[in-house]
Length: 73
Image (cartoon, rainbow, N blue to C red):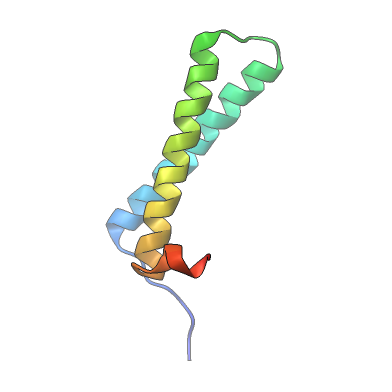
């Protein structure tokens, strides 16, 4: 028996978006740590963090089923 999970193309797109958003977040945090900080960089970090979290929850719910959030409790 195989434990392989097949994902939809929509989920695949969401995963690629998570990777892209994470790379942008990594860049923004690196800039902030290098001292290149202004309000727009910090605002971008907050927005990107929220977007990544939202996308991760969306994909987790799709892959694990609609009760994925209750499994963490």
